[in-house]
Amino acid sequence: DTEVTQTPKHLVMGMTNKKSLKCEQHMGHRAMYWYKQKAKKPPELMFVYSYEKLSINESVPSRFSPECPNSSLLNLHLHALQPEDSALYLCASSQVLLDLRPGELFFGEGSRLTVL
Amino acid sequence: AQSVTQLGSHVSVSEGALVLLRCNYSSSVPPYLFWYVQYPNQGLQLLLKYTTGATLVKGINGFEAEFKKSETSFHLTKPSAHMSDAAEYFCAVSHPSFGNEKLTFGTGTRLTIIP
Image 1 (tube, rainbow over the protein chains, first blue to last red):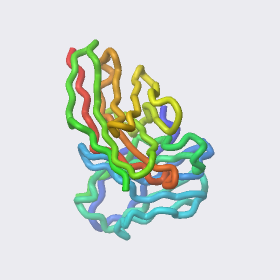
Image 2: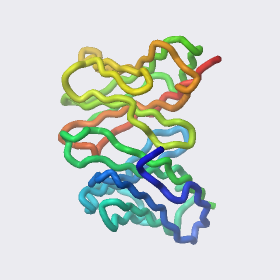
Image 3: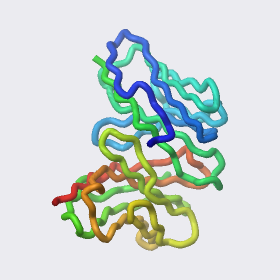
Image 4: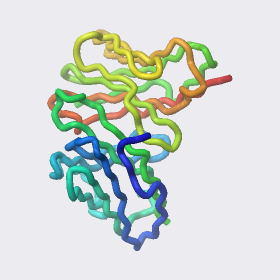
């Protein structure tokens, strides 16, 4: 069982819709991530939150808007998406400090998004 | 800059045979190296990692990898493949100064197990 929970598992939306993806972890991790994964490709980093503050934005289009309401929750708000945004969106969490389990990201099972 | 190259996007082995998945890295400083596994319709799970110390690292499910600085490699092996090993495997690299935030993944290798 994954300790990072993502909802919904599947989402179909039109290009004019507004929807949100949600992620929750209760491991006390203070770094949380959004990755995008296209079919047969590696995950691509989108955003990183560290201590609830946005620390990395990998030049992601503004139609993706992240939010970290508290240390356990991470949202990704979606608006005016394009069909090419269809992908698996993975949430992950980790310790922030390097000497605490470096590189060990805990991933959720992902939210599979289809944009029509 | 840091990167990893996984040779072979698709590897097939017979059940009980040796598994060898190749990963080469490029980094200007000593890297941290990782192998992650992704089962169908699931997220990624850490198999093993090398940070410092012993160059042969053991992970979960019987997998191990050896860091070879002279060859800039971190190949993943398992002596005897099991049907449950069928999955996508990603090699990844980071650097201590970048932290966990800058984990760079390779393009992945899909492992198929032949009964």
